Length: 275
Image (cartoon, rainbow, N blue to C red):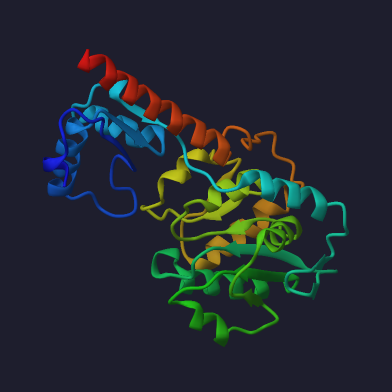
């Protein structure tokens, strides 16, 4: 319990800084502020979380946005290897992609990922362009929906290792993520492939890493409109040609270095205070 934490020990907190994935509740925000004010320093994932704490009274010098990431270096290495091979076949799905327009979905198949919308949009896209196919890698409490979809439209594997993720992202035109976007933002930036989403209101902090119109395209409206706009958008851009590559800035090594810097500073600050 924080209330029993020894006052002469540094306390560093790490978290979102505010509620991103649902409505903010006043009592939660108040408790978070009290906890943050008790801390030696607070680390947030992103600048938006940092600013939220500052607005609630925390001094700016006591809050640092350290980032969040996955193993981007391993994924980048796998992508380099995969893109040396032809992209008209998916090894992860054992699927011939000649005369196909593949799109990707990567991550949990859960309620907040809008899986029914995803499947409706895929069926609309296939009717609009029979070359369309959706490659899905993930599992969750909504995965049963995928078992009922025409296998000519949606291909599904419940899990994917780094090489299989690299395959999925290399052969696809874009990532479809109509619901919550989280760490898939880092995968997308590493692979230099855009995410297509809706005006879903509760994305995770990592959504902040994406630039609208470049790294992420928001298609408001129903599933048919989403399919139309997505097919149109990807047909106008070359694959894997983003000028915005944040692999170094977003690497897990950089995040770890940022965190270590905060922890060292907190210990040093407390050591000086004891003198």
